[in-house]
Image (cartoon, rainbow, N blue to C red; front, side):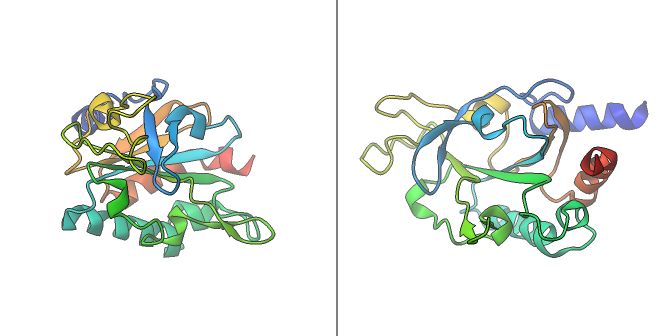
Length: 212
């Protein structure tokens, strides 16, 4: 009971808008690669996969970039991590656990989609095409870039409004968090970007579902 209470309190502190045990509420974000506005819920089809929703915050801040890179290295290279541990050999790297990154506060044009670990833009399928639809942007309300490149960012757009996803989930863009989301879009666990072991333990507790 104490461990569960601690986990719930940690989730409230990091992202009160992502309550553990409840369905994830969908909000609009913008694709880093294409500038297309999408709802997070549309990126979570009921296909049996678990999701790591990585809210990396403003990666122009060195510590946030360092945290995201450390997490990418762990997920991509560490054999004890959940991706390499549970993904069958020969399958796409996201076939069991899918990683989605939502950046906050940084303009889309200030970021290169290729400046990240492969786990966040994996090569998939027979021909190894990269999947760039795993990284999304959420701008802070103070940033009002309105031109053809920025019109569908998570700010005031021409046609789709503003998603304010960090505000909606009550996530500090200078801290960020990781949310483990079940295949039915319910939040299972929320923790710090640096808590690799806690994230892995949360997913390991459901390992029977990966094997079924």
